[in-house]
Length: 454
Image 1 (tube, one colour):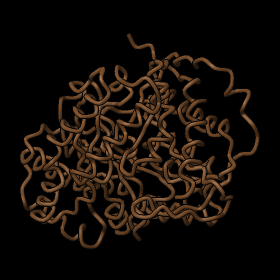
Image 2: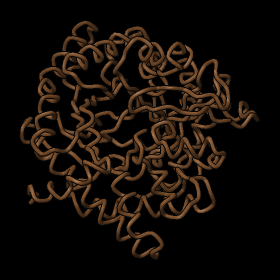
Image 3: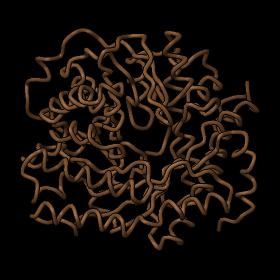
């Protein structure tokens, strides 16, 4: 049982160490909304989401006030629209109408993001899914709160290189269509390998087809809490270090468990999972990079960075799984650049490169996240970056993703301001050598030999 004494123990974490619940995300199935008539489909989608989520924001606010734990975001994820729109949508423009419907109902119920404008094409694309993917630039340019994701590979299926090539083009087109806002549309677009069905974090959240009709998933956070705990064991050996991270992750996850149970009870919606990822913000002290530096690195990117991150990620998971029976989503350590002041400082100091970030993703959650790259980066190069990251996920049986922002009109070293939780980022250099012939081969990269488990 979780009691109020555990919450009281966290008061200092909230007041001084940036502890918060990063998101309550309500997952909503739209499978019963499928209709061959586009207008009817949009109406059903709007009504279903509104009926389920109309009390989500108010409930989150009430819980926040009563137990004193900040709940930063209240969000919605839905069944991948590539599936839901297949019967009614004959063109990319048809899919855009659904994006606008999602945006409208998100505004009506008061959530800041709605995820699930998504397609799952790890082995192949139907004509409908290709239309949906081609609609993404228009959809993100004409909405404010819609988030999009595409799963292009998995350990079981290999990599769909046709989808990888297409997504390089889609990322670049999205950047062009939102260039007046420093290509902000790309900050709401993620390309996955092994995408999880129950991720509560944006921009990659969608409600998987294996999920119940409606569920509550909670994403906790606490880089500042872990950093402060490690300051007290500075210079101690790895055993002490690991125990400290593990115990701290346990406490942070218990807070998320309490919030999840309360939200589930008050909304009358089953509890799904806790995602215990360390999710940084631009706030001072709320940084995964600073944790790694506290472990003993002069700067993130120095030799030893990947080992330190592997240690951190593993201990966070070990502590978290003891605190909740239902841990899922991504669960580990996010390493976005724009959302983490320590990462930004390391890039500016020349300590952290795109290649080092790629190496770090072998041992942590997600992948290349919120990285600004030059606006003249070619679609083929973006596809190559996606392929590299997806290959790491495929071979290592883990989730990896790419959220890069080719900022139109800006070059290496210039600063891009996204605002809010998205922060700001220096434009990072990208390898100039071409991979176009590789990307243009077409077809699939087969699943690895160790995927055959039957």
